[in-house]
Length: 317
Image (cartoon, rainbow, N blue to C red; front, side, top):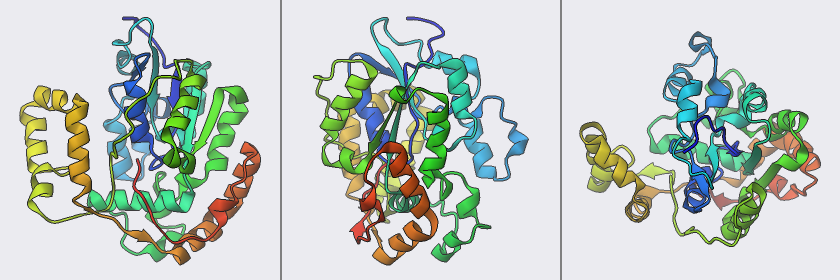
């Protein structure tokens, strides 16, 4: 074990673009040690004044994160000498200070980003909040009013301004240390993307990991006994978490059990469709200029993101 190890690579987000699944896959590689805490958020929260938050939920999110340096470094103490270390925090993409703290503490870290068509990402985020009974507001029309919570909460509309957010990183880090992947490619062939990621961070890219798992699926929960007991915040889950935390942690780290439980949970989620007209309106009225600028920044054709389509939005985290 080595003390005071800063991460060798950092996944910056975006939320609802497959980062929870990616965390699971990276953790399976024998040469990678992932932070046991997904989304510690340290680089975006160190020295941030709790009184600066206007939204109580954001303040609570801060308190539940790892915002002290000694606590953050402790996350990587279990790493072996021959392992590289990494972590995933979606907050880093839209944080206004994370890039500066990463530059300060881990200037040579490889930076990875997963991006999803922003209207679809926003709708998936909405479905996640539906699942957890934490809707920001019921009326979708409020989405186009910049005075509403949709714009004030950084993980809603704002997170999808990818060009603005990524520009900070391209201005402060070598381009060759940043690798951006699209969720569409990741969904079609996750093993191909993982092979490239393994090569990028410097581990054996021939290692095959189990990608046959869907985690953190979002949607409206069915009102039934299964969800009441074993759903995301089921009675049995919360009971073991509170009264038998060590058992709960062992249970959570058992990949076979988690794989089975996630498959079972996904059968008890009602998925919803993102209407084509709503997708078009969100894309054109909010994100169009950002998408065009992002395509130029990445030198990648993103015209598919601007094209209208009706689809069932798959959940991702």
